[in-house]
Length: 118
Image 1 (cartoon, rainbow, N blue to C red):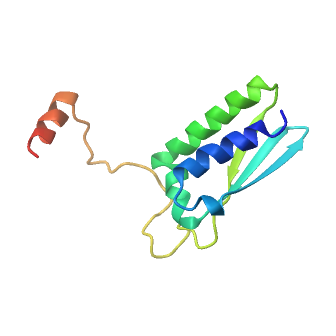
Image 2 (cartoon, one colour):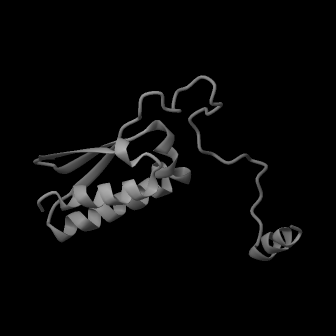
Image 3 (cartoon, rainbow, N blue to C red):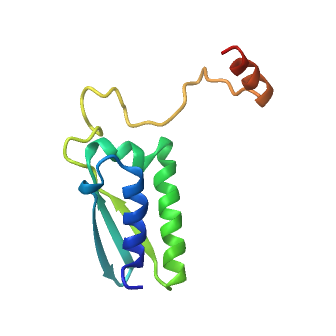
């Protein structure tokens, strides 16, 4: 596979972040497959993780496709940067991703009606 997975990850991540010079990727191969470990600037974590982790999930899915093409299992680990938001006392984040119980889903028509007010 010759680091094609690492090149792909670097291309995608550097295209997303504000500090591409801080992107560091370490590639380790063992009996379990390939592990890519990603380090980046703390300010760029949100861009790489995405809302509810959707961007990170998409990147992992694409990496698995690249790996399958080369008969390898590829996994991605994203390291928490120094000074990151997780665990910080003043963020107000309690570790849950649950929506408030009062949140009600709207139909597409209702949402479009709300948008037309703007």
